[in-house]
Length: 424
Image 1 (cartoon, rainbow, N blue to C red):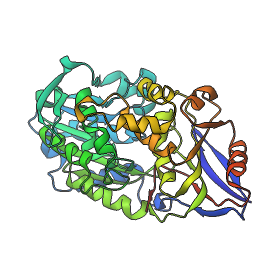
Image 2: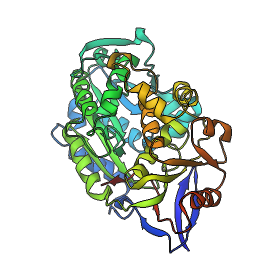
Image 3: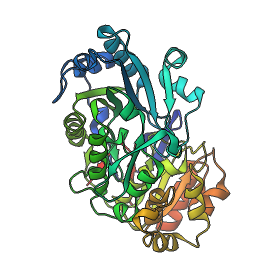
Image 4: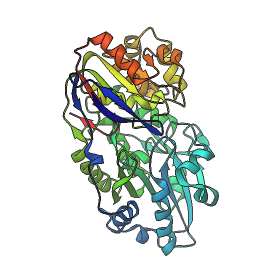
């Protein structure tokens, strides 16, 4: 037996695969990359050496106010480290500047106070001005033109009301935007609902370029770059983290150039060669990304890239927060199967995209080719089955089910962290 350690919620599981079945363990090299600096030193070094931009301290001189965009509770941005450093540097040269922290919820729900404390620590939550973006609150939005795709660009009006707009975030492989980070702080981060929907239309999601690790010709990425420029995103701090959510590198400076440098670094260590398998075991990297089924689709796409058609994907994900979106759940549960979902969604015009459409479209694409067994002891099995997936409480139960479907000699691949790899 080979034992593989995989993340689950806030802990880890040891899963065992018979040696005669195991044909590969696909892992990013992020966990092998050992920096010679502490996490704080990595961040400070990046800020001291911005890419394509003056230093942050130079940008804030003479400004009366500024906005720092940061991710919400669904993203493992290590803000307990990055935000204090940003605030200290800003106030060291401009102690009177008015700073607002804008939570980029995108199309998600707002973060709770407890989730904000978990993200920032109680001191920042109690003492800083934190504003929760609401993509559906039209009064808080302003129209800034038309996206290359033709959709209207609505952003949080703070982008025009502030003198300086910066963002912090992290870079990871992204299952349809290519990579997270950079321009995604703006779109979908602080965009209006109709802008997010237009950008995430079925036509774009179906594009062969809207895949993990691809930016060139990616239609969603093109829209996102345009939105960042229109918002005047002046500076970013993006980090790369390992499987333990520790910072291993950081990139600061121009929102496009610094982001591309980070993507290039990550691609070098995250790319893995596919290994054809009948059964693929994957995860969503543990908390906070495995809180719901919606987010767990990301980890499934890594398995999709290496699983033989008609194979089985074993998705280990806590889903303690449920399905993650009512539209996501309803569009799957109310359909006879994934084929019906795909047939319907591909007929929806770009400007009529419905909430969560991109996520149920991708899950339906996966379910049309593979059987998915979702492993969790924190979410109702009947709801998982209603979304056309199988359920198992334990990994052992799931693997037994998979062997029953594919035979005792089935070839197995394990992807310990499905959101951290680029499978080619």
